[in-house]
Length: 566
Image (cartoon, rainbow, N blue to C red; front, side):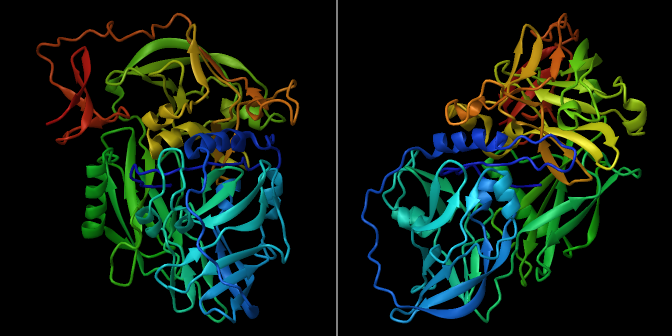
């Protein structure tokens, strides 16, 4: 489940750590190493171009206990936002000033901070200072928050304080800053704009408040309604026996309701995103939080089916400017749109890496297919059917399963989210994905290329491998989490000496396609002159009714090109 974001990006740092249940091989800091470096590339070296606003002399007095919803540690440690009981003080000399003292005193996710190689100081010397003298323009002043993710201590500062600061791609203007100000109403302070807070480390800035949840309820008041949602499907990669997916919306029980719509296509353009949001607001079906709804995928036209959803306020209007979406895999869609290249040798490196006490590395033959409309899109057919453990763990489904990967650029191959067709004892249904694919979906591959951010996957001499950047991840329904895989500790790595990206080597996964023709699809015979044109979106999904203003892959017989429909 992800939010449906537009393409407006300031600066970001994507950090994630691999959760490691009992029996899983642990790779400490495997992902933060990569994503933190990416954040530095996107944020750039920054500096204050204008002096900070004057701050009055304070006389702090205790108010009592309030509630802070943390959306600060979330940026560095891939932890969930949580409500924390905190000590609140007010300024007796200047009305409207507040501060949180020892904000991490009652923090309950310290084990995850430690696992990620970070520290979070619990001390009365750590405070968060807030200027709410204007309730419509609440500011967070830059203060030490006692947080170190292994790359140095960080401060927190409101985006409102960054006017004149250069963030690499642009300099923050007053109008930019004004949109990120917090609000105060009925004793509750909230920052509902994404990235309204920034983390300052060395000369770099990284986005905080990535979930738009940072808030403080002063003593005697309640936190604002949290309109963020999660959608928990009963199955992740395959529908239930009746061909439907079932989803439960999770969130604040005070949310009046949830609107949702389904679609055969993902909106690729800004215009399409706006149209989707408008349709959701006007035509969305309504459900309650913590209730289950059925998603009928029978009208699917591509490899994925989409649901868009958002909480609504008391008036029935969308409570979030950017809704969420879920993508549901559709089994055996458009098999005629794929061409079998032949057999390849797969060396299994996912389960054997994450669960080494249960499974050994082994190699076997698999079938590889190529998408006709998008020749850079491949899939491995039933990747675990030939596996030696298949009789114990293979799902008894009446459809095929695939590992999809995009190899349009042989120097930047990445795995798409795919079901593996197996269920491991005590762990449940398994699937594969990649952090890089998540970033492609959220930011677009052009932006990633612009900043030199790559997947680590390459095809050389027809052999696909992935390096040790740790971007591949495996999902088990029983844990409800992704776990990074296909990594090996680098024996030559020296902490504090070697570059962080050299901490791990690529794992055992390999797809040897020697003998297969990866150069083109000229061998697929068709009568171009008389063939009917077929259109596919840029994910290789068939589109029955292409809309004007969008770019599609057009296939007419054996001829394939990229066109904009007018």
